[in-house]
Length: 177
Image 1 (cartoon, helix red, strand yellow):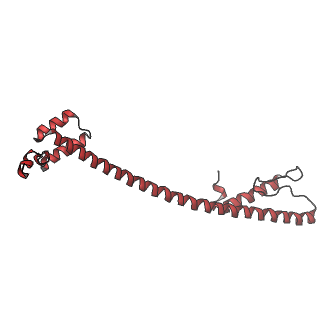
Image 2 (tube, helix red, strand yellow):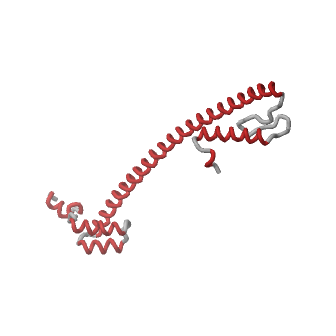
Image 3 (spheres, one colour):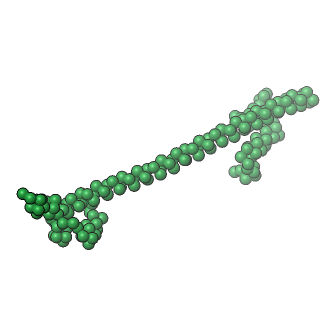
């Protein structure tokens, strides 16, 4: 059998190339139905004037390209989400470091205030020989040394803590609820 005869009988050479209008019709059909049902395959083959096998192959190739493109889009979307999550993670890590430093500063300030009040108390006690009822601490607004309390001293201590807090957060105490 010569080369010309092979062309006539080979399915590869009998297949007609689809024109633009046929491709548009298949594209519209694919947009509506990603899966080619047997009835649709026969209907499209009749409309286009091509063998049903050619319609099936076109659908198979189109679905493969569509899945590949879909996977690429999904991958790109996940890449963007990953980059955003990593960026957010870095931002949060910076925030944590900043807040840890602010906490450390606040603890140092509270410690210094407590030491300062103890020194003032010692000086005050030497002058008046009267105990101070409250000390500033990080855990509470005050602690009574002898079980007694003085609303003047307690209010005075709370005011100092509030003022320290306002200083640390940069707020105005009068706006607190």
